[in-house]
Structure formats: C-alpha cells, structure tokens
Image (cartoon, rainbow, N blue to C red; front, top):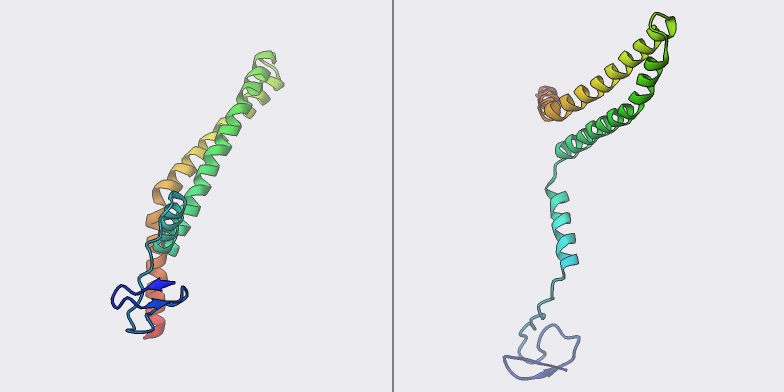
Length: 142
C-alpha cells in the first residue's frame, strides 16, 4: 500500500494518483547502471549522426580496408626478393622478377595513396555532391 505524502490516505500499490486528494505519486528514481549509461550514450550518438556523417564514416572505413590490403601485399614482398636473388642476372626470369616486384610495389603504393586521399577528401566531396543535389532539388521546386 502507498501512503499519500500530502493527505496521508492509503492507496493501492498500482495507483499513480491519490484516491482522496488526486496528488500524483512520485516514482522512485531509478538507479542508473554503467551498462544503461553506455547504451544511452550510444543511442544519443546514433540519433545525432546525420546520413552524411554515416556515409563519410563508411567511406573512411573503406580507406582502412585499402590500408589493410596494402599491408597484406607487403607480406608478399619477400617472395619477390627471393625470386630476384636466385634468378640469373641477365636472364628473362630476372627481368620478369624485377617487373613483378615493381608491379607489387606499385600496387602497394596505389592502395596507400588511394586510402590517404579517401580519408582526406571524403567530407569535401560529400559536401560538394550534397550541395549539387540540394541545388537541383531547389531548381526543380521553383
């Protein structure tokens, strides 16, 4: 049984207001747990993020993927150096090994440069694209 703080009347446990005077019962403050606080802060983060920010984050994740591929290709380099070391100096296999090594280094460099450009220019490009889309939408509305 709940007792009204204002008039002292006894009320049922399910009551939200006093039957005698109509005073609302205050709910006891709920204790916040660290887990609930974390979920609440994550929920607020996703509510605050715009669609543009989500796209920028996803595109930048792709850039991290390019860095990962570059790191994987670096692990292949020792085999190219080994092929280069064991090939006779003036044979076609030596030239092929040099070319393959050059292509692998170029592939690694392209992945790193592309990832850096994506990270650096994602937001300005998205702003430009969204500005154009907004201008087209406004022109169509007039």
